[in-house]
Length: 367
Image (cartoon, rainbow, N blue to C red):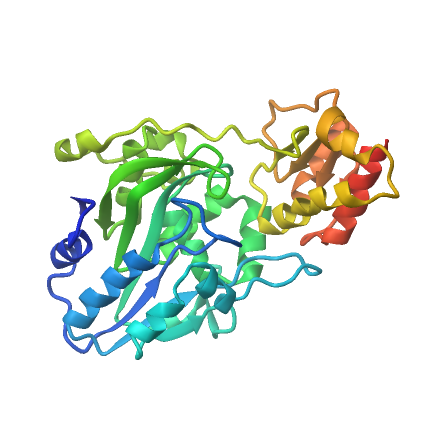
């Protein structure tokens, strides 16, 4: 079952009325938002406070007994300031929700007890609630093509699972995770989507709808088609070995042609980051690159950043990709095979440390 409502007043309530018609009064509900911005969210990046407010008001109107707002912390290198659960609440602009819904329970999944389920560490809190609602955005993703309902499940997992999934093959493990955690309902907020280098560096796309579904695979296949993707292009959907549903005729007017991720981000004008399927520790460690522009004891560094350039490789790289003539450095264990195959300096570690990355980048830029 996949439902769609156009963006507008009451659209979330209408979807929930259809999707959860038999929600019992007195039920306990866990709501997982899509919170992955480390600073002010870009359009289409985070679940918005207004969307969460609409969900919580509907639940309140149905007389649920307990509502929890739950999310894990963000994966961070060991020597970089930690982005905690409460940091995420503030960054997402959701502090006022605590005033509007004084009985709302905040659940930091990074410190909650876990249970081993199908090889994954899964929060015990999922078993302690009658209903689980997975709120996500409509986004492209440089590592997984799209980041919608299946990818949103990773917001329920601790740091160690994020590292393992990216290191061991995120697409295959996402397919397994979708069989392990099955939310009662997933809601896709798509007034605005994100195309291109999502889930953080993409561009906004006006979409004008909200989706709801109780089957992660069917919902993500529908989302993919609405973004102009064939579900077979999305590895974690293809790995589930199911036949993708056709797009409902009524949904056809909402189809867009999202720009595909190119797999590269340009920073400081001449630095190209190729993240592959790397996790956030490599991204965050490498993001300190621009700090070196201010280091006066390294003559020519600004010229290297803004004119000569450097390629930064992270994660598992496509077999068809090879290094260019630009000076290069590889970061993290996932990029080891690429670095060794092409004779590129490698910053070892999983997770990597930002200071090691800084040193390696400075050496690459000085070379």
